[in-house]
Image (tube, rainbow, N blue to C red; front, top):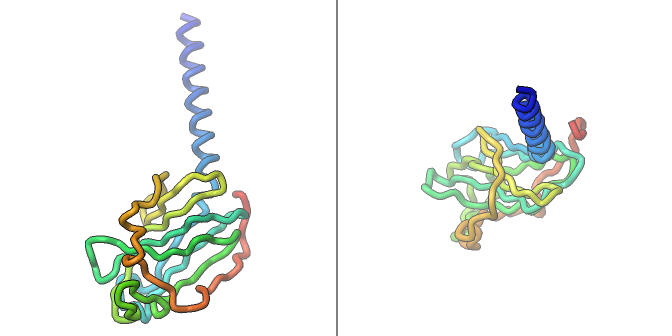
Length: 165
């Protein structure tokens, strides 16, 4: 009987260790997010705020956007987010990579934020969830699908509250 209880205790301890490792692995990713102003309307009023509230940069950052309710999202390459920063992207500063038409007459909606954390893990953040992900699909990376920023750089602000939390 004692062996059975020892096995149960060991199993519970192992499960707690796994959960702790998972929490630690998600710690930075949980501090990276985005939100939109005027979601799903013409780009001239639309903007998206992409935040990294961790003290470490994230890299390989791609924001996928739905344009005019198309069946496939399109990538906007942000490349990296500095520590403790908020990057604001205005719809009026976006160009269609195919036609070079300004996005002010397009309806825009941010679908997902893809990024790589300090430990090299790939993540996918949506409105509803944060999940580990594989590499960015190659078909999404074809240059003709890209949205382009028609400015020197998006607005980047330092955030006040930033810690390992």
